[in-house]
Amino acid sequence: MIHVGDYLYRESRCPATEAGCQGSPHGDNWPTWKADFFAPAEPLLRAAPWNVTRGNHESCERAGKGYFRLLNPALAGQTPPRCTDLIPHYTVAAGARRFIVMDTSSAEDQCSPTTCDNAKYTAEFASMEAEPGTWLISHRPVWGFNQAWGTITDALQQALQARRGTLPEGIELVLSGHIHLWEVLSFADQRPPQFVLGNGGTLLSEPLTIQFTGQQIGGLEVKRGRSYHGWGYTRFAPGDTGGGWTATVYDFTGGLLFGCRGKAADVDCR
Image (cartoon, rainbow, N blue to C red; front, side, top):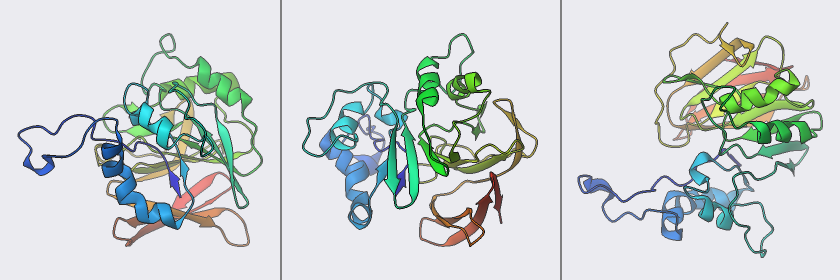
């Protein structure tokens, strides 16, 4: 099970005008973490191993203390480390698949080349070593569209300029969240496709109405893309004997919505 970040949303007290949430816990504490994440996720936590990613809701200024106590990748029984703005990337092996988990909780969505704090992400990309077929997990998309802003995550795209915009060799796919909808992009120059799997939480984003083909993002041309605005989850599975993989999208009741096939840096959804 992969969670792409943002676990705690009840950061402030329920407004007096909202009857539906009166008495709800709030703040970075165990009652809120239990109500927002651990209690509703308990059946799935018991059913499968999890690969969890830090979101911007878990920054040190927000729910970072709880994240470092409850979900930081320290070994069980160790003293939780103090909250820091950047956890160095690490690799997780699950079966035959390897995942690099990158902490982008503090990466800026919109900034100019002179104001972006991208040096730490430039260093992160430069030090990554990926075996062929590795998937990169990052809360903020490396490439993504948002209806309100257009393109997002300027800091990560500028961090890649030292690599001519390319991810480290060996990375096959990028899985992210942050934008509160479902989105997939594949590119004309055959670099890894980007999945945005942000439709597991509150639907804060507006539906995307752009035509993806031919759009420019981070100096790249989008070959094809698709989006979906509704709650749900995505299941990935190995492809047929020809290689690649499939991504099947379900609504929150488990109803099948549509499927995608990926191979050789291209994704086709039907």
